[in-house]
Image (cartoon, rainbow, N blue to C red; front, side, top):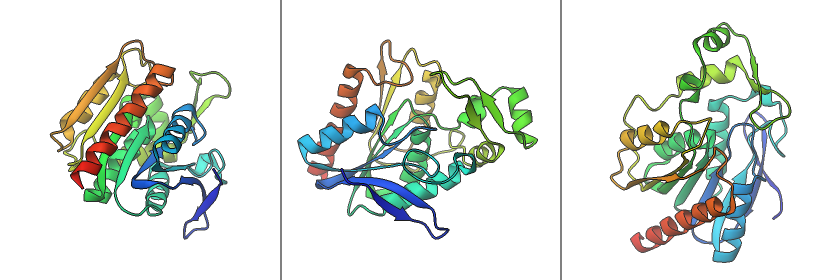
Length: 248
């Protein structure tokens, strides 16, 4: 799949891989410090190739193949980029968001309204700037200090900038009603040590849609990237695409 680019008014260049196909377009939103070459994104690309649906993948600025500084990233900035990528597709969209991408997915679904025919959250993590940090870390971030915490997957420490944290606090969603009417599917592992299962249940309660399903994966961790978990993701996406095709 060839690489293409979306340019924003401030000269940001966002790396995109667009697989054309029939019907609705699936837009994949990666997690924090992740990119479009991860196992879930690639599994969706293989499914798109096999089943003929269109797929958009992209990297937030400062991650993957998109140039820029990760330290300049904020939730608002990356949401703007997601909206610019969504504009590449014609017609209806099915949004798939992993972890932080699940937070952006909810905002994007709210912004795009009836154009969104379904949303799939994979260990979706809305509002993690609130519940994901203790009082001491929040105080440091609120004071303008960047934070580095151990990476649960090893390697370089995980960076949270004060700017990102503040943007997250401005874009919290779990304390209000979300006017998302499309079908919602939330996949969550019961052994997820990063995002509590309760977050999926809270999303269920704040979206307006009456077609909401929470699927709890026994033994599933935050990554949800074991073969049977990727098969579940593919089946969930294909089911919503079929439903959307029937509805239209």
